[in-house]
Image (cartoon, rainbow, N blue to C red; front, side, top):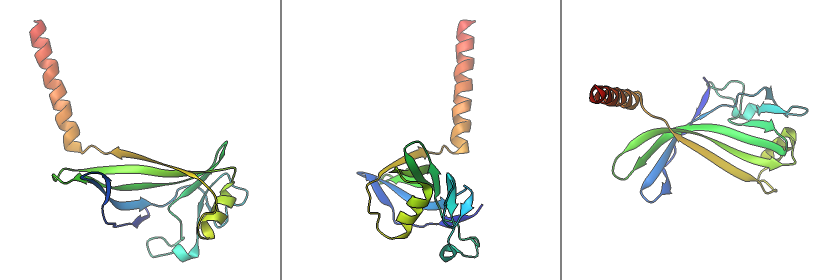
Length: 152
């Protein structure tokens, strides 16, 4: 899987709770340099080409919908608090460009500061570790056995 490594200083979500972004995956829609005539595309640009990303794919997908176009990309990282607790996270950031096609959004993004208003949304999920899931399953099994013995 191609990706962008993205080490970043932790950013605060709330008082004493921080996130550290460590990974942004590349887009996975059909590839295009200009997205003209496409309802779904992942822009490519030779300026983004590296050994790990020889096609120069961008991190985001442009997906046309009923109201315009959504630009979205996925992230992974870690959430932690000042007490030392940590958990892996994954999420998707999306911004809606009302009334624009994917080609128009790509032109907006390519020409510097975005001159129009848009709304953004960030959905974040804490990813449970396998050991946590195993402990939860074992605990539920124990409760089931205790309940069964109480009925007998």
